[in-house]
Every structure is written in structure tokens, then in C-alpha cells.
Length: 311
Image (cartoon, rainbow, N blue to C red; front, side):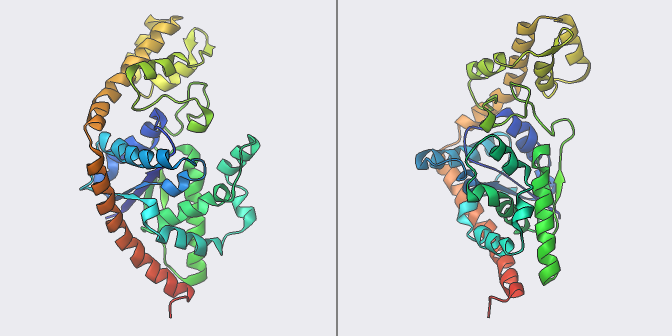
């Protein structure tokens, strides 16, 4: 059976872009694969420097996974930091990667262009991500369009190792869901916590409404384009076309309709999420991390032998 892998950073509250671009695709397909779902806490350290928030965000991330319907008996849910092989493999792969190769990374160049602090871990982010993926001989990674380059990097880096030391790693492929490759934010740009343009996934209805009402109502003709581009992800086809035709020029009414459509999707998941105790989450993470590490250890035994450090 092919292996599926994805992960999200516990750097803050998830938004609907995370749900539509990663969580929902994973929840829809994971049962067809041997599946791994990672809480990417070491990646989150590139931006989050608050230990108390980090601890809570890790628990919250697992609750988010469970709330969207992921069964921990059918997917290995684990914590990145509990698998030291991730960082060990990163060091080994770093010996094969050039500075110029990493300087081409879109995410790094974007943050640098916006004047954000570009620490070494942010620069090296693609190599740690490659390690995350190839440690588990991953075949498929569901990602948003903006993450496609990271999977290409993982493929290239794994290929460099295979060329240098012999066939060792599976070369992963990305799975981009048509229609939600890039989920727009309230300003029309890609929805991102770093842009401050998100609609919270598990916020209250009032919090969702506040975010929706802040959507910039840039329009073509009499239709609010940014509202529509988000709305089409929750209601499609003729029903959506009819709604916008009947409410031509009525931006407030269309935003209110979007709030109701988001709430219809989110409300049942929010209720499930609120019923999950922290103790259950800790058990799931402990068991999942132990299971993930078994595979990671096996792969690293092979890697150490291939590079010549095991005697």
C-alpha cells in the first residue's frame, strides 16, 4: 500500500485555508493509504518563541485533526520533535545541498522580501521538510499550490542522496486538490497566518462573521470577487450562481450567506473538537510517535550504513 504523509505547524489557530488545502484532502483520502499525520512542532519554532503557547498549540493541532474526522486507529498521528531521526537525517542531507539551491526557495525569498527575520532554521526549512517526508518512504503528500516547491525540493534532495549512496529513499509526489490549490484570504492574497488575512477554522460564529465581514469587496461589475472566490469553496455550481445573481450588488447579504455556509461546515466539527480531552490527545501522540519512530529508526539504520558512519 502506498504511503501518505502530511503535517501542519502548531504555530497558531488553524484557518479555513489549512482545512481546505490540507486537512480535508487528507481526511478524504487517508483511508486508502498507510497514512502519517505529523504535528510539525520543530518547524513552528522558526516563528513561535512562546513555550506555553507551543504546548497548547500541539494539543490543539491534534484536536483539529480529530475534529475533521481523522481516526487515530487508521492514521499514525505523531509529534515531530519526538522523532530525533528527523533532525539527524536533516544534518546528513545538508551535506548534499548547496546554499544556492536553498536560496531559490519561494517561502524564504517571500519572507526576506517582506523584511521578516530570516533565521538559519527558516533558510534550512526545506531540508527538514524533506527529511520529514522521505524518512517514511512517502509516496504522496497532499499540499497547497504554495507548498509544491517544497515537495520538489524533497524529491531533488532524496535524489541527490540516492545518486551519491545508492537507492534509499522513495521520491515523493505532491497531490494538489483542484479548485483549492490556493485558498484566498480576506484581502484576496493567499490565506496565511503571517499575512493576518485568515478566517478561523474553529472560531466562534461571531469570530467567523467578523473575519468574513472584513473581506475586501473588490469587485468586477456588481459581484464581490474576493467574497465569491472563498464562497465557491463552500457552495458550488448553479446554487452559488443563483445566489449571486439574486443578490447583485448586495455585498452584505452575500457575506452573511458565506458566514452561514462556513458555519454549516464548521459547526459539527467544532462540537467534536470541544469534546476531546487533553488526556486522550497525549495518549494518541505518545502511541503515534512510538509507532512513527519504529519506522524512522529502521530507515536511519540503513542511512547510517550507506554513508559509512555505522561500523
